[in-house]
Image (cartoon, rainbow, N blue to C red; front, side):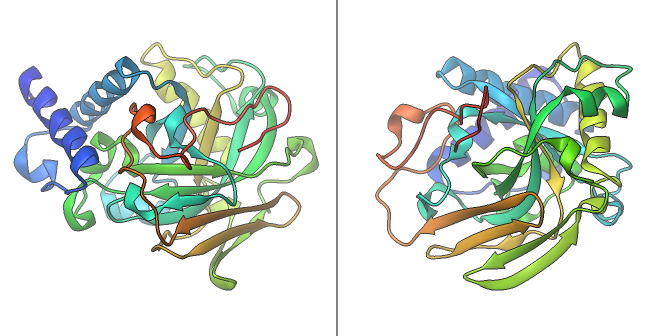
Length: 293
C-alpha cells in the first residue's frame, strides 16, 4: 500500500469508532494490502490516539489457537495495542453504546515486573519478567462490517480490540501451572464456554515470548508495569446490553464484566477519554503493587 492509502485506511477506521458505523473490509477496498501494511495502519491509529492524550499501557495477543490460525490462513499470532482508555473497572457497567458488534473472551493477563527486549527472548526470560497474573476479560469488537475479517482487517483494526476488564487479586505465577490452567466463561450465570490455557500456544508464556520477539524486531520493548493479554482460552461469545459475564479460572480467580442496559455515554473512541461519560475511566489500573481495575 502507498503511504496515502495507509493513512486513508486509518482514517476510515477512526471514523468508524466515532460514528459507530462499520466499514467494508479493508482487504476488499485494498486487495494488495499485506500484513505489514495492516500493522502500519494500526500504528497510524495509535499515533492518533496518543496525540489526543491516550497512552499505550500494554499489548494484546490474538490468533493464539491452531484452529483460528488455520481459519485465517496464518502461522503465527497477531497483536494490538492496549491504551489506557480501554480499561474498565470490574463490576461497573460498561455502556453497550461503546461498541458496534461486541464479543467477549477470557484471558490470562500478565503484569510485567521487568523489561522484555527482543529479539532473542526465551520462555525462561518471559517467565522471569512477569510480576503477577490476573484473570481478565477482553471485549473484542470490529469496525469491519459483520465481522467479515481477514488477517489484514483484524490487525489493521488494532487486533479487534474493544475493552479490557481485569480482576483485582494478583497471583504469583510460581503458584500456578499455566499449562494445565482452565477456565469457564459464564453469561448471566450459565456456562457458555470452557477452555484451557494449553490452547494459548501450549502455555500463555509462549504467547508472551512470541510478542516480545515480534515487537522487539521493530525496536519496541515491553516495559515494567505494562499489561499483556495473552490470548483467549475459549471461543469468543456475542454479548449484548444487560449481560453479566464472569470468567472463572480455578486457582487464579474470577473477573466479571457488566454490559450496561442503559447508558448515555458516548461511543468508545480510543484517545478521547475526555469525551466519555461519568462511568468511563480514562486511567488504566495501577499495576505497580496490587492490580485494580
